[in-house]
Amino acid sequence: MKQQHLERYRKLGLKISYYRKLKGLTQEQLAEKIDKNAAFIGAVEAPNVDRAVSLDTLFDIAEALGIPPYKFLKNDD
Image 1 (tube, rainbow, N blue to C red):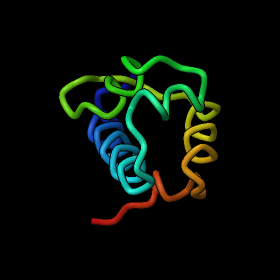
Image 2 (cartoon, helix red, strand yellow):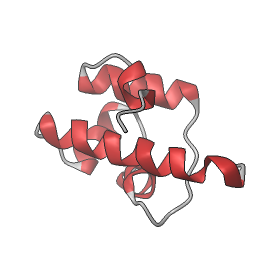
Image 3 (cartoon, rainbow, N blue to C red):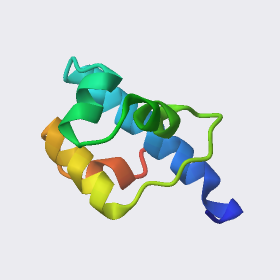
Image 4 (tube, rainbow, N blue to C red):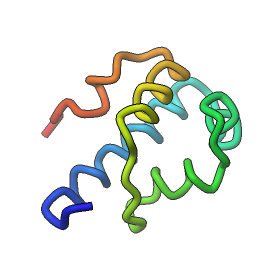
């Protein structure tokens, strides 16, 4: 993971957390839907953990949450 992209990954994790909670899912439930473990989702969502996400995983998360993938990458600043 490139240092210059750390803030983008942090924001991505926060958006995943936001949409997951909006759907009323726990980290465990989302992890189960995308065939990952809860620790993985926790690391992705944690703002103090540097965890990259592949596009395949991002697409799986978007599908599980019922939202278009671009919403995770859209800059809302």
